[in-house]
Image 1 (cartoon, rainbow, N blue to C red):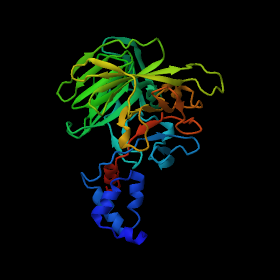
Image 2: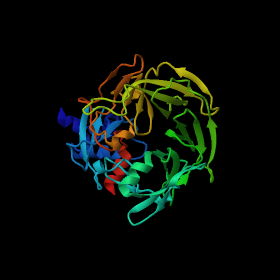
Image 3: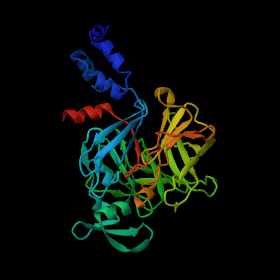
Image 4: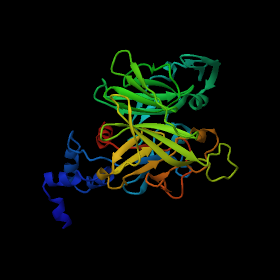
Length: 393
């Protein structure tokens, strides 16, 4: 039977392989020359369109300082990936001199110099001058920071958006300090473009040339990045939530609307006792649907039915569970995006798990709960075509 399956016509093999997720597909392509041929043909543009289940990328002290761990939700197993230097355990997902790194292939792409960010200037050798100012106010005199200090002071969160409306198909958006401001760069740009004057941004999503960014106060800003000089319109409304610790997220829903997601925390303790097991727990999510064209809030959603959310220190995702057999509808898969891990709390378990949006019950994502080091765990989605291009260069 095994020999007969290897002799199947190429079109039938391709139809079968097209239903597999990347790990199983790669394994199938290594079985024999016939299967390898079908696998190679499947990599041509437009042939392999199967949605990939997100994976959790994290670091672990036991794995080694240059190793990243990739947990597959589809397979419920962990892969170990050796990355190029500098060691990932000594850096953030974004560092002083910034690069895009594909954690699966190890491919790296340079980003514009950190000195082109508005608040950063070249200082002494191997140091930078960091200015604590916004468009409206200077908060303190400039300070001189070493490389590792600048990482902690400047960077907050970064996003990579792929789109056909940009020259090189890629836009990188950077939320940075002071006060979580916005800058962006397209692939090939020589410098970062600052988007003043607003601050306290938590999350971003990019669609059709527009960057939607949400602040921790609930304001949504829509930036038109396709014009030579970016323009902005603002959607302002009060979420009406209690005075609680929270984070705001914004995500494109599969049915076309934008979703504004509020993540509310319980059991917050910013100064935990030595050995305390948990000091920061996600308690519930509050979700609003927003009309992107009018900017009006449509309604508060009590559930997401057959959709799943992915939250963390990464681009927020909303996926149709029917397209991903490993996912459960009306659930949120979350990991923390808490910056306190860079400030001495690395031995505390991460706030991560799977939250049932119907009753706010939660279960562990991986057991035992991770006490991962920096950088913060992130959700990534493998892309077979980009992997293949990198491997063949």
